[in-house]
Image 1 (tube, rainbow, N blue to C red):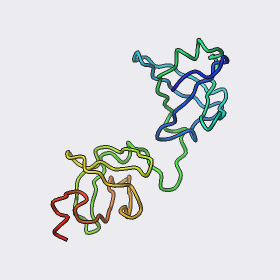
Image 2 (cartoon, rainbow, N blue to C red):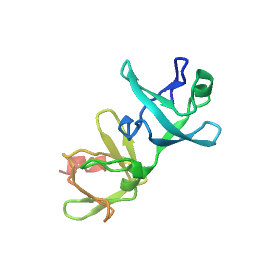
Image 3 (spheres, rainbow, N blue to C red):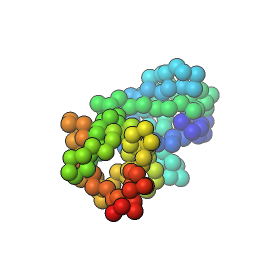
Image 4 (cartoon, one colour):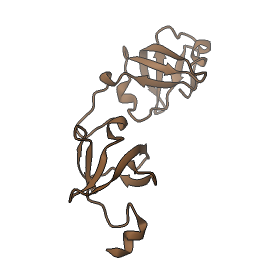
Length: 164
């Protein structure tokens, strides 16, 4: 959480991967505090101020109580998040094999990073970047742990760019 807002215990939030769609009044969250401890909280209210989400939690009724939560990371139970068509949890993609349209394994997804323009899969020990966009991704089968792609030459290995 980014900071205290006002005197009534509201906190400024910088939404992350799942974003503020998963936050609403009545939702239970876990706050991981800077000292390594965690605390269960229930969202009392969510509103926006100048484009930024503000959260109020049950039992956090003043600025002093809210200040104790500044810097905490919020986590929502996985089962409470409704994914839309074509949406995936990062954890479901990490470990998937990246294969080309002919079935050749290109590497494994080691991480997912999120940038303003698009999400990116990091592949193998070199952490080569593959944009997670329809132009390249032909299919994602989380059950089979497989992501099928059609990549331009050189995207994973720049030395192959001139071979095409």
